[in-house]
Amino acid sequence: MSELILFLAEQGKTIKSGFLKSQDKAGTRNMYGEEQMALDKWADDVLIKGLKKTRLVRYIATEEQPVIIEIENPKNQFGVVIDPLDGSSLIDVNLAVGTIIGIYPGNVLDKGKNMIAAMYILYGPLTTLTLSAGNGVCDFVMDEKGEFNLTAQDIRIPDAKLYAPGALRKDYLPAHAKFIEELENEGYKLRFSGSFVADMHQILHKGGVFTYPGYAGKEKGKLRLLFEANPIGKIITDAGGAISNGRTDILEMKPTAIDDITPIYAGGKKEIRLIEKMIAESQSG
Ligand code: AHG
Ligand code: MN
Ligand code: MN
Image (cartoon, rainbow, N blue to C red; front, top):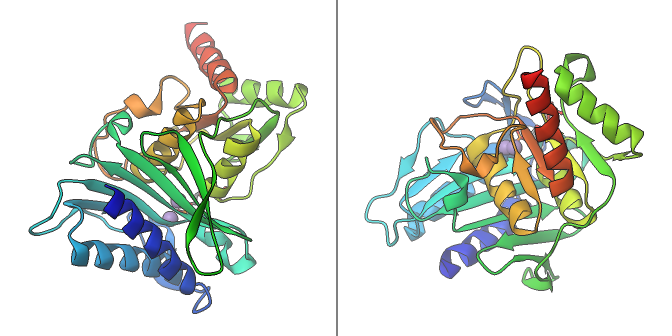
């Protein structure tokens, strides 16, 4: 697994080197009907080609591919789930974007709690790598030589009043509206960039809660269970936080298909308990 993690970290450098080449749209759509950026496809290509060449894993599922890729003669049985570039609509305005990866012992259509490692590389003013592989959550920062140096170990999410609320307020479902109102009354400050990985990195270090809820007309929300919710969910959970769909722990969900989507509440345990309580009450009453 360490060979795989080192290999993936190395790909972050290559992905980053593509940023200067193009900030344009690719003219194609992914399986969610979303417009792909040239860099979404670049990052996807870098990772898939590299993994095929090294044969370090057996299964690859990515946000940009409609089916699970199975590698011939793999050296290991690992399955990886990848959001090659998260927040890619922000590339042209130079905001932070990232690569999110989860590693399973085998099949990728598995519960998030069975992941053996999760990581993300965040391309901002610094290029950082955040990893949880059984020894707590660690941060690394890329230096001028392109090497990742450990900067923080056993990261724990602090208790703080930040909130990152996705979706449109006019479409909020009643329990969610109540939750947001409560956070605002408590003095939570708004922090939403449009890049899940960047917003969650802030929540991991500064505390609070990120949410992309289900909403009127799209009760499952927008974000992807395999590629976004689960890897970030493992990291935030391993840091003492939690991730929920508003009813239950997302890491307990058994995926039905690679493109499953889910409402997301991720951050401090206190905030996650509050939304679960509010949704349960709205259903019982
Ligand atoms: P991606 O760039 O991988 O398609 O993901 C974008 C996601 C996520 O990063 C972010 O939280 C959310 O979409 C933002 O959506 P809105 O534009 O609806 O706020
Ligand atoms: Mn994404
Ligand atoms: Mn993406």
